[in-house]
Length: 267
Image 1: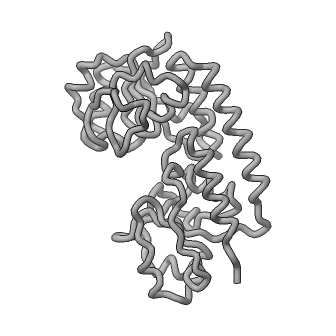
Image 2: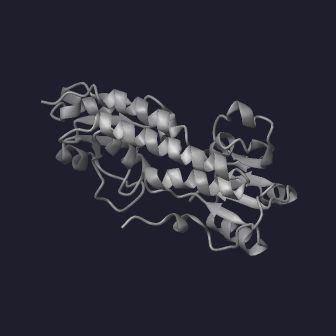
């Protein structure tokens, strides 16, 4: 059974009124605030790569994995948005102990992501906009699922990194995006979010496509021409890095991924 959306909310109390001073500790959450039209309520964010243009002037509270706690507290937020791993657990617990309201986004599939737009929208006074985004996202994903379905899904190895070799496991929103595109995550039976795997395991599962995520090098696979993905010339980088950030822009990124996978040949 899939985890309910309530599992994404931390136990500490959430604000009864719409939050007016929000700090985002994850790029995906920052994007959602922008997509909701609530960027004016962002008083701080944790940097983790290039910022969207609309967030260029928002004060920084540190870099991904290194939260400047004093800076965050000086901003007096009434809501902090985060994702698992975006800050060390000790700092997350410190925020809880201080009594700051926290919302943790942890969608396991695209439906939970759609619900997250509505949930965050309610918290920041953009409930109507959040519900509209939810419905648009649901409709768009349903259309892609119908357009790109396959009777037999493509076996896809999604390589997160190459040294050491990491992939994605079960119950990942990215794995659900692959399913929308008529594909199957090669390690969807592994109950870890980002399992470390070895070359032998990949060879045994015979991927028809090998996808490289952000910065993942793929040329080393040419040493194994017996792999269908290598023999068919289907060593591809993802066409849109937004596929790895669960926000509304993931709809367009998923469509680009589907377009790429639709080119895949079979033996």
